[in-house]
Length: 264
Length: 263
Image (cartoon, rainbow over all chains, first blue to last red; front, side, top):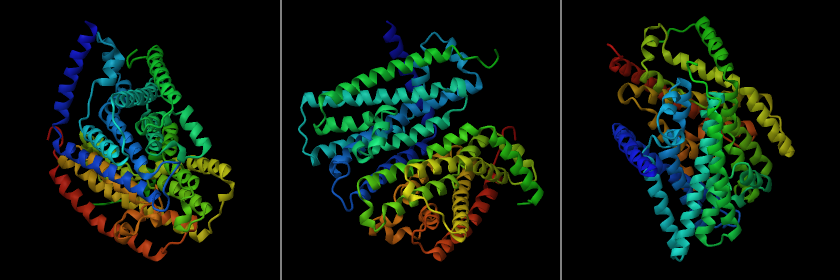
């Protein structure tokens, strides 16, 4: 009953926000071009790295393309769902409209995280999958059901981790009011996800696996994709995703206790 | 069109500087978000990629630190502020004032750069602590030239974004055009990889575009890498003199097109 209600509400969210986004048609087209250029740019950057070497951090060019593909998908998801919604939190809190969200007979985290959608990110997701399919053929990867299942699981875990990171940072708005710069810091850190973790020095590797788990977000799914991931890595990704999700949920409920609305 | 005198300029700067000081943490976060060049440096040195472009690791680390600095002092966001002001109708009172509103935004940027300065220095000091071998002191003349070229780079980007911002008069959401233009700026300006490492088929045309003069050129001057100073400055001034009339034209066309709420 409850789940059905949420699904119904979500489909309403979808249709209203797509309708409002499509009002700016040229914008959608420009965003499409941006997505294509951005992928071309990162492949260009990668090709500079590979000009005089055949591997960085033990990954050759064809394998590194997988990471680009996964990064592009995740970036598309960020642009479609996380970015438009979570920047809205800042607005809600600054303008005091979070009151209206909290008064609704709905889960506030659900409402805040899924209210809007920016369809221009879809193209990035499609581009990412296209790149992955290309990678399957150039890396001669055998596809079977188990492989697909593992790939999807790790990809979902990455999405959960990514969402939790965004949500955690956006939640801090309740205390600091203006945090869209903090999300900008996160964005620049996430940029690292375009490259294999092994191409960084040891200290950075530690930083990006423990404090900001970017390693888990792109490198492990790519390893799974290549069929070289060890089981403990997949399990640890599952655990990290679980922990991050629970923490972000708890943190939101905790932060709400400190929310004082605009008029009180 | 531009009636500006010294007093107005100083007042504008003072007001905007105190405004910016209120948001110190915010600006510190902006400064931190600019550390991508250091991650790139880490990839370059950790995989011994620098040998192939005849740059030692030390010179490369100086290059990326300089690129970080140049980026810090040439970041432009006028289109986002302008878009918000245009959407909310705040432009109308600005237009009545006997001062082009872009001077206000210009002063905001300069004030923000001044606020940013200490944070950038702190980040540089941390960088030197981690990489003590890359410490260097540029000569005074090179430092001045680097500051000048960084300022020119800032001017070029400010003009480009102001032109885009003027499109708000027609399309309301001009920031997506800026996001589109940001992609070539990101990949071709030398922020992520020095332009000399680019493949030949790109190097053959890139020096005609404004991109390498945004980061690569000032960063090369500051870090003491080889660069053609005279032609670099020539191209920077060339682009400024091309963009300025375009900006003036779009501005005057745009203000005629402008219809405020209620008018």
